Length: 337
Length: 69
Image (cartoon, rainbow over all chains, first blue to last red; front, side, top):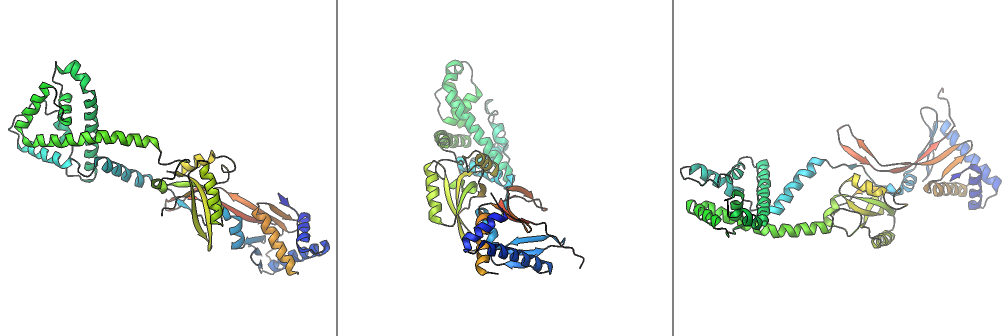
């Protein structure tokens, strides 16, 4: 809506109870004073409103006061530029964390290197043909490079565990069809890892191995302990992870997702009012948060929706929000407490 | 000039500008609130930031003086 001079005079007349002619005269007088002051090279300030002055090009300019600027841009007051997350910093540590969480602290890297050294030293002892197939996997994990090699070793170990577990679950079918005919190396590994020695040929091989080197049998026992537990736990974890997503617009707030972004849809001076609106939005199924910011000494309460991993994710969802939120919003980084 | 008039002038302009209405006064100028969307900005040091949105009051006037003096 546009307020023109005529409408402004009407509004001023209503507000001041002055005669229309008086209001017109006073408005003209005000404009005249502003121009005069500016013309004399002075700025005329209307307190708590702004400053009128002529700039270097001789054009009349207006600089709103801080109070007026804050009030006009109240919704966005106090917002500062948000640095976008560099991908490198986020991707690598997360992978490490996930690996350490899944595998645990007692990773079998040390036994592998011990075994490596022991196998190198004890070359004279003859090995059955089935063993070299399992050894290259162990030899591939160099001990010297701690940072990357440890990660790769863990990944390789996990893949071996997964491979072993897959073989374990598929084993009954294989033994029925093939087990009686040939001694399959992967099957043999599988039985060693899982500790299930139902097949006669496999038990024989297992006994031979244990006779030759006691260290290896110990390692095999450790592996078997570890494989059996993760098989159940990993299944449970995968079931849990599919039930609820970490980031999203709807559902309950998840504390771990507070490292991301949310969509601000309301700003209030009053915390109670902000909480009321947030509660209403919560009942509609949104993840809502009320956060406070101090802007120019004034506390502002913002109601935001959702938890998103990145700004583009939040932006995409913000565009699909119902009116008026889809056009009247902004994205902020969630304040971690 | 009347104090009541100045006070009313400020209040009316503030009320309407907060509502994003524009105010045009013939022979003087026009007040208008411009909305700037949030946007990405790259600083000279390579840092990329998301600039927040904002509403800015702008004043446009045809009044101009010469700077000859």
